[in-house]
Image (tube, rainbow, N blue to C red; front, side, top):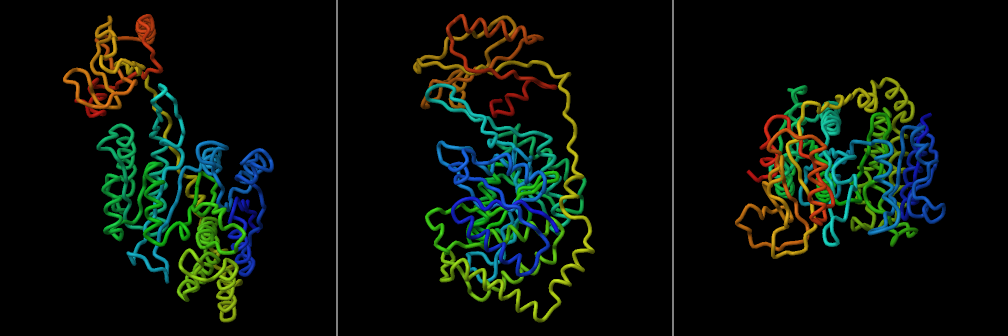
Length: 476
């Protein structure tokens, strides 16, 4: 008997959770649910949206099935989803989008798996107000994080008999961050010569998805692109109401539908439990209970084929009626087969499950930067005289001013383009001779004495060619 943490969540979470519980009971799935709490209702009751007791339960059980939780917009508590992913290092978000029987959509043969890096990118929420008018978010892509997600994508492709993995990126513009993501993909792909690979720019992918989605198989993406594209793919097969997901780490996994908590229909018995049922099917496959997963999937599909839909899919069936129809399909199947016995025999013969394979992914150690030198500085300053360039030294001992940009557009050296200026400038200095951190501090003291308001600096470090910085930013 496998113990699983169950988080029902907010809004419709209780109703769709009950649907899964009833289906599992009908087929006698050998799991035991340990119910814990998280979300807005938990926050209002206990003062925390994610109690430590809930996290401890997931760590202990290694598996969780989670309903939707409400995240306040523009304030309030942090996202429970993001907190769980980061706290447990659930680095891979798995989002399959497959055409379901009985649901009419524009495309009839979609079978795409989106694998989204789940920890890094802008979701670190490293944000700052640079000036009263300018906000900054840092986008972090690491070699180790890219190594993990690409290795996972190829392992998933092998285990699930997938033929092609596509790396999605914006490396034509974000040459360093997405460039690193793409470079690591190509490195990992060398270990899987029997899997077809390709890469595609994210905007081109979106256009291709809404014109010819059948050409894609497995997509692997950085965090924010994966978030957007996975919802797009869900729309191709019927919407978020039929979109399951998994958040997977080295030895812990949390399965959940990706739709919201829908408080406006909570308690009305009209919510669609399909996405949560599909998520539970993914969970059963993950822990090696494939036979139970296949039967629930088959009976769910039979229910949809029979035109039994909830209101969101233009049907008239309630949540409980939809669930009971699946249970009826299970009972009908039980009359003609030794359903439970067959499941136990089959699953006792299973090879290692997905989580054991993920544990074998070992990211490389950090690469020391001892042989990297200081190539220059990016100094970010506030300057409110929009009609005149900032009064900063063009040459100071070991540093030479090479470029000033405003909102990412170069305004120095001239000519200055006719663009809207804001009070935020990036001033790039290149070192004219070997420098150290003491030289950097001396330079900052000079501009500070000139009453220049600088909010932060970035020390540019090079390996070989100093021009790598200019080329990476499209400024060569």
